[in-house]
Length: 146
Image (tube, rainbow, N blue to C red):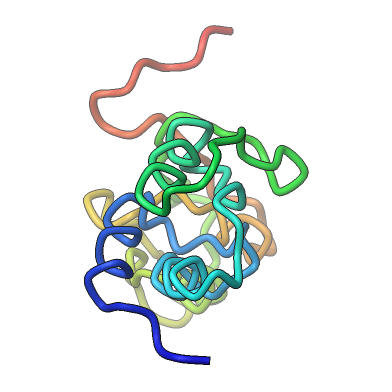
């Protein structure tokens, strides 16, 4: 199979949310964009992008729009991880799980999240053995009603 056009891959990649969460079944947004450009993946595989994202991808690819596949996860407003510092044991598992290097700290020391880098992918949550990570609305987002 021939390589996808770089300009098409760029356009598709720019439409994706850059969460690098893997819910699409690929190792990140760029590999998903490349697969779509090669016609090896459908436009409905990105929960963070939601229905609007799937429509935008369909438009670029010239295919019929359809909603994102709800079986891959829930569409949520942008979130950011926060480590409850008093509970952090410094195991570094969250650092290893973060695909965008948004968590910093050292072994046996408290860790923290660099909020501007955090994509809200939630991959750090299952990695934390003491459940000291919470997800909060990203800056400028309304807090969930409760």
